[in-house]
Image (cartoon, rainbow, N blue to C red):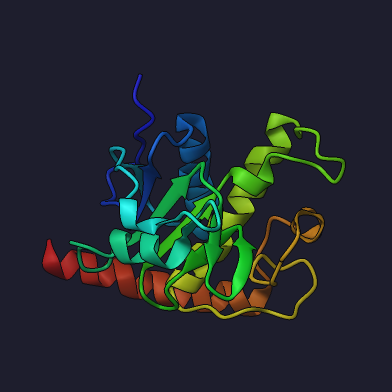
Length: 196
C-alpha cells in the first residue's frame, strides 16, 4: 500500500517529499502531523533523488540550503513543499541542523539523521524518533510559511539546537503563532482555489 495520503477531497497545500531512500513511515507521519497540527491538507509525493551538488565531501554532510533550492523547483502556487531525508544536514555557518527552510519561501527540509539517537548515543524508540521528526517538520514548515522563531516556552516555533531541547518542546503552537499560521494557511488555500 502506498504512503500517499490526503485529507478528504481538499487539494493538498503541503507536499512531503521523500529525498533519497527516506523512511516511508516517517514521511507518512510528517504528512499526518501537518494535517493534524497545522491543518494543512497534505500528501506524500514520489521519492526524489538527492542532488549530488548538495553533498559536502569535506564535511560528510549535505548542504540543507542546496536541498531547499532543489525543492523550490517547479513549485506550484500556494503549495508548501517539505523534503524528508535520512542524510545529515548542515549549513555553511552551522555544524549541523535538524532542518532548514526558506523563510516565507514555501520550501523546507528535515533530516532523521540526528533524531535517531539519545544523549548516550543509543538509538531511541521509534515513537520518540517520529515525535522528534514531527516537531522538526512542523517547525520548518512554519518558517516556510513565514513564521519566525518564538520565545514562548513549549511552542513549536521556539529554536532547538539539540535533541534535548527538541524533546522538551510541546506538540503545539502558542496562540500568537497559531493565529498567524491560520492567516497564512487561509491565504495559501485561496491561491490554490484561484489557480485550480
